[in-house]
Amino acid sequence: MLAFEAIAEQRISEALARGEFDRLPGSGQPLDLDTDLLVPEDLRMAYRILKNAGYVPPEVHTLNEIGALERLVQSLEDGEQRDLALRKLRLLSMQLGEVRAQRLQPDNTYHVAVLQRLTET
Image 1 (tube, rainbow, N blue to C red):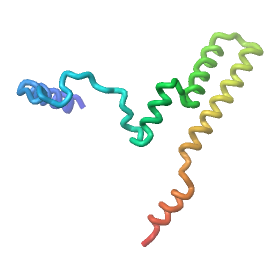
Image 2: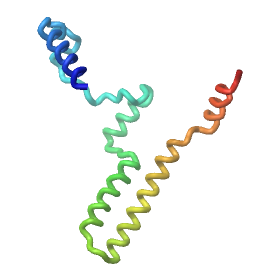
Image 3: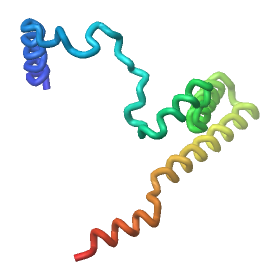
Image 4: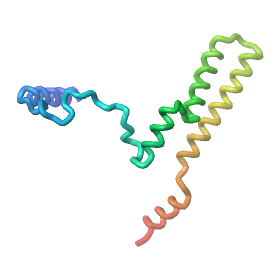
């Protein structure tokens, strides 16, 4: 991998020396790193509105709560409060796992259609 990186760096340096990067569109302007390239175009505006309104997806909220509970469990000594926090932590972890598992399940009708298409001769 180091050889590939060295070759890439050498070619970039040569292109810079030749001035090939001097007049590119947007040259000298800051990059817009806030674009949602992985979000379908028709959903970008809705996602941007939700993001600007401070909306956090339920999974992120659950992950934050799990982190807070983990820190609480580490700070507590053995006892009833620690046991209660551990039970809640396990419950939240299970719920998060179920949500993620449901998202990984293919839509059954689509799955059946794909299988039919693949088995046709």
